[in-house]
Amino acid sequence: MTVTIVGSQLGDEGKGGIVDVYGEEADVVVRYQGGDNAGHTVVHEGEEYKLSLVPSGAIRGKVNVLGNGCVVNPRTLFDELDALRERGLDPDVRVAERAHVILPYHRLLDGIEEEVKSEDDDEIGTTGRGIGPTYEDKAGRRGVRVGDLLDQSVLRERLEYAVPQKRALVEDVYGLAIDDLDDPEALDLEALYDEFAGYGERLAGEEMTVNAGDFLADRLAAGDNVMFEGAQGTVLDIDHGNYPFVTSSNPTAGGAAVGSGVAPGAVGDGEVVGIVKAYLSRVGSGPMPTELGGVPGDTPGYDGDPENPETEREELATYIREEGHEFGTVTGRPRRVGWLDVPMLRHAARVNGFTGLAVNHIDTLAGLDEVKVGHTYRLDGEALDTMPATTEKWADCEAEFRSFDGWDDCDWADVAAEGYDALPENAKTYLEYLEAELDAAVYAVGVGPGREETVVRENPF
Ligand code: IMP
Image 1: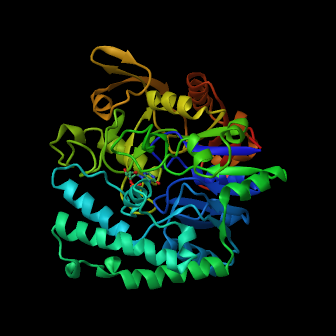
Image 2: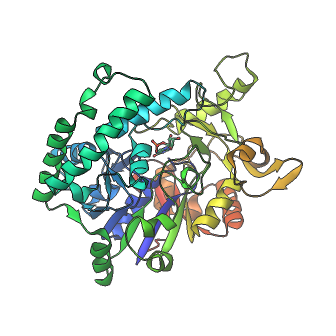
């Protein structure tokens, strides 16, 4: 069977930890979208692992697949694999031949475009990993796929088409001198060819490439449990998120089928577990109706000046940011923090068809007298219970809050050991509210960063 794990918010919901817990029953862990923008931290046997591309199943000795919907930076792939090997692990990672390759010029262009947009305060706040430019080339049918790395004449042909275009873009559109760039080799055809042909040899030598759809169909037919590990989150989905403040792929559950070659029926017959953080965080720009306190440069209208009225709620945001370690795994950037946004979650529950929920960071909110949620929005005098389709309207939404009594801090390791009933009553009231609003049962509750700090009520496999 399949279990699909999807972020229900803006990424950073703690998916890696849940994938790790449920992944114990999985034979194969599949990423179906995104690339090395997906910073995730997995704590296993007291060791902390920070990964950005390799699926978290690699820590647990599973077979891992980067599906065709992914964009793969071979530099990151091999750096992460080498680092895991140095720590004594033996990761088994297969890469779809149909996945697209992130080349150094994609990263370069990601940076240049953000820079240009920032002149008008229009930057997305990307992770700078070249994700958008790589998906652009995929859609523009000028991308380099993993399978192309295995055939040197095809690789050369692809680069001979793409590289002059990228050089012209940098020089003629952006008006930059290539020799003055930090990394002029990013646009040097021969240097790119040598490096990436080398990755092709390594991928072939380690027998890492697969036809992902065939590979997974065989594994499912053999009775294996397959887990799809979504990266980012629903509101960062290029179709269902808050465009243009999105990533360039489909983290939503439908992406699991398209991005892996497994039929939609197989994904739909399985379980789809929505990962919810008990509050909200956001990296980068874009609206956030339940925002508490922001990050200068990322939060519209907020500059960190104590005289600025936006700074008022900063203390609580800072508290939650620090307690919840809300700093980017990939970039180290402080994340914007807000109360739970329930209209956002209703949207996510519908788009993804959640059959269950895992709610993380219940421990982070412990000790607060009051915990709020944005229950509905008000837009132009009307109440809305889900997100509007345009980002401009979403930015105009005002959250209407509901208040819950807070819960005390406690020995969360004991709670995790004893199970759901041991959770503080007020935390259970909060969770039951979510179950009722989203029409999905809480399968797991995260009460700390480690695998063992998860209250598991139901295992979807
Ligand atoms: P990109 O994916 O690097 O193009 O970034 C596009 C948007 O998605 C930016 O707002 C990023 O901050 C956000 N984003 C990308 N990956 C993650 C993630 O793993 N967690 C949270 N936000 C992310």
